[in-house]
Image 1: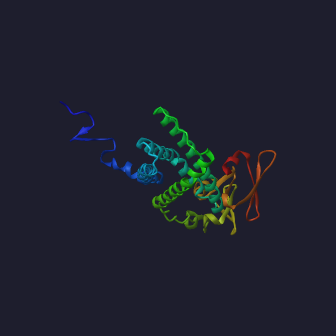
Image 2 (image 1 turned 45 degrees about the vertical axis):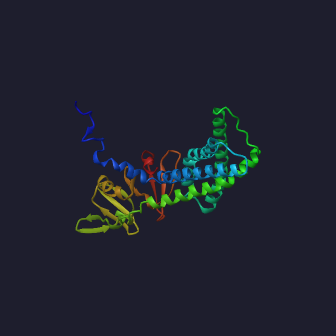
Image 3 (image 1 turned 90 degrees about the horizontal axis):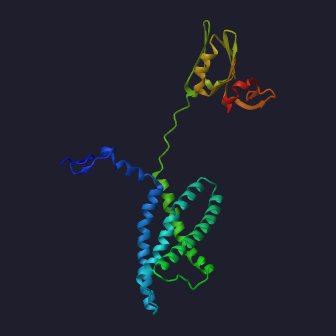
Length: 288
C-alpha cells in the first residue's frame, strides 16, 4: 500500500521542510508568547495550591467544601485571567513609550478596569458552572466587598504580568544596527563649466533653477552655473532629498523653512537661508 502523500520515513513532511522549527523560533521571539508561556504554568500551579489549601482550610474549620467546587472556584479565576491577558499586554505595549507620569496613571486606571472585568467575568463563569451542577452560586458578601477582596489579589497578578511582559520585550528586542552615514555627507556633486570644476556636497545646495541650457545651483557657496539639464540634476539629487516644485526648479526638503499657498494654488517657499522661490500647484504634492 502506497504511503499517504506528505509522509516519508515515518515523519510528516511539511512545506517548510527541515525548517519547520523556524515557526517555534519566531514564537519565542514574541514577548506576548513568552509571557503566556510563563503565565500559564505559573497560573496552573497557583490554582492547584489554592484549591488544595481551600479544601484543607474548610475541612479544619468544620465547613468542608466539595473538591469540584474548590477547583472550579480557582479555575474560573485562572480562565478569566487568561481571557484578559492579551488586553493587559496590548495596554502595556501602548503605554511603554509614554512619559513616566502618564505610564503610572495609565496603569492605575488599567488595573482598576482589569480587576473589575476579572471579577465580573469570574463571577459569570461561576454562576454558569454552578447552574450546570444544578446549584445556585450565591456569595455571602456584597459585591463591593468582593471587588475589594479580589482587587488585592488581582494587583499581584497584574504587576506580575507587567513585569514578565516588559522583561520579555527587553530580552527579544533587537539592538539597532548602527546607521550608515547619510549619503549626502559623503556624496559629491560635480559642477563643471568649461575648464572649471566645482565639487559640492548635496546638503550644501538649497535649490536648483533652470537657466536656458544651464542650471544654477544655489546655496551657502553662492551660485554656481553648470551646463546640465534639469532632468539630469533631478535624477542625481533626488536620492538626497531634492524634489521638483516647478518645471524649472528643484529644492532640498531640509532647506525649507515654510510654504505659503496663493489663491491660484501656486505657492511660495521660504528657505532657511532667507531666499524665497516659487512653486507650481502642479508639483504641490511633491512636498506632501
